[in-house]
Length: 382
Image (cartoon, rainbow, N blue to C red):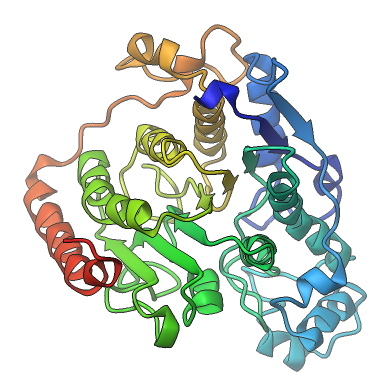
């Protein structure tokens, strides 16, 4: 039962100091605002849950994935000492990945949030961990990309792998999880599943059905790209038919989940049409696997929608959502500071463009069939 499991919400107040410039769309206040919301709704009450401050990532952990030269460049950039050409080659100094003062110290603390979450699970201090400050899945070993400089997801998974644990990573951020895929593309001890808007219409332009891993990792990467306008029912059907059977067949020791909220309708940087009811459903299905769960944040550029959705997902992790579900359906959300009822965190049911349903459904069905033909047999799924 979810209520019997120990839950931890990872939050570092120091991440509110400095960091990304104000003009950058990646708004780090989302974690604090989520904490404020769940606190106001009594979703932190109880001996089974706690707020935990993270430790900064140590250099040895960082070098488990990132190149030494790149880590040195991050420090030099934050001190104003990095050559502009070298910075550009490493993805630094772009609108997506600006250089800012003391960025190295900030980024290693940001990365430490997910590492700290992984260690809470490994040490038996928590069974379910939510870290809304994490989910920087575009960072590569030697370069920054898409608001991401240090890949906290890879680093957290490596903590589990070093402890002898097999991990399954499910990413439902609207953007393809290219950095994480790259890290584990040739290995079978980590299963990576990415559900995202197609690279044909969205950054980073990767994550197609035929990207399934290489060598020992063949079949241990799975991509489900979605067309513009994908709505709840279609997305949920793909999850049930394609992702869930692999999750169950792989039978990982630990589950890791990226809860980017930029797939929600109205996000300014993407084109899907989901409500947060889909994210809540997927969290519930992951919890039902009965395995330790580390969940991170990720994208989400409509701030109010993102905060409400993360608060909803936390309520599901705590088992406090079911009693409000019937009351909430069809009524829409309440103000974020409300303490009246957790069900108000749910989005209204959206009326999608029925005229596009057929084309969306056909494209998704074709994607699901491709995955079933290439990935399912490797896992013994008929």
